[in-house]
Length: 161
Image (cartoon, rainbow, N blue to C red):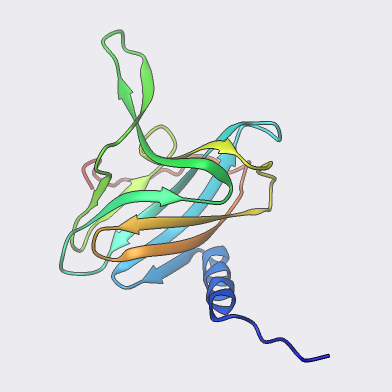
């Protein structure tokens, strides 16, 4: 029987997965740190992904979309307070700015990647393949660990960054 060789895409995704599970992924000027995914339980229909996105370059970039085989739909979302003081999630048209030499935080209670119509359970210790689409950097694929136990990150970053 002939020996099969791994595809270039398979080798690349394996390398990306290793880096993602180690804590960060670097693609061009974009660096993804501390990505993790959550859902509310094994039967949940939706989930969310959070991370720190750093732009090490000298040109601003824009996160304009996301996709994943783990859900029927992935959208860039934020929380907005309505006239009654109630926080509601909304899709962000146009995405999130990633300033040159700066960062943008996707965090619980704020901006995030919303997964709708999960295609399977998000189980502790599993991974979710996520492709982020940037205006300048193009597509960046990250293997995101599912961490249902992680507490919200405490950062001192400016909310505009």
